[in-house]
Length: 188
Image 1 (cartoon, rainbow, N blue to C red):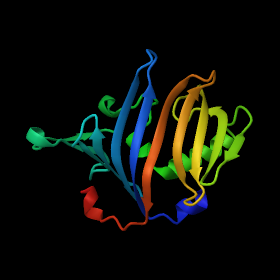
Image 2: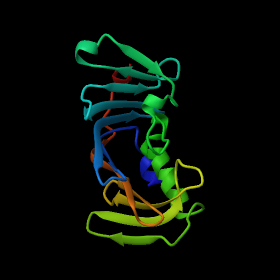
Image 3: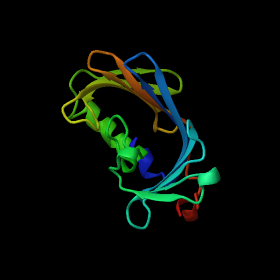
Image 4: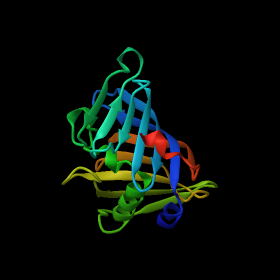
């Protein structure tokens, strides 16, 4: 995966983040995620808040947030650790790229592993399952399920459960396209 990612200059994917709530409900967020090396990120929200655009970094190293519709005249510049941007896992916007995910997968199956690595595969994917230190929460162990494309050699999905097997969330990367020559001005 690391060698495959080294060849990637930019990529775009539809991301769905699914969170399983304690009350049994499911929360889902969908966005169009665009990334260009060295580390430019753009998120175009598709649901539940369509039209919100977030770009990192702005000229001051913050997250630019632009609203659409009647509020399109409003632009915000938020710190990476702003509570409005915080995910339940504590992951910041600058920690969302595939490069960091691939490094975290390596740590999960190597030095941060807390159990055996189970490997299975089908025609198109390899699945790794492992109990490891959580990528973003100190002192928490998480059961991870990583789904990797055999063709792209890049992650397509990450599932997270508690050490006891209670499902917490899933991140799905759909229609992942790499090296598509994304223009710099998309991040302005």
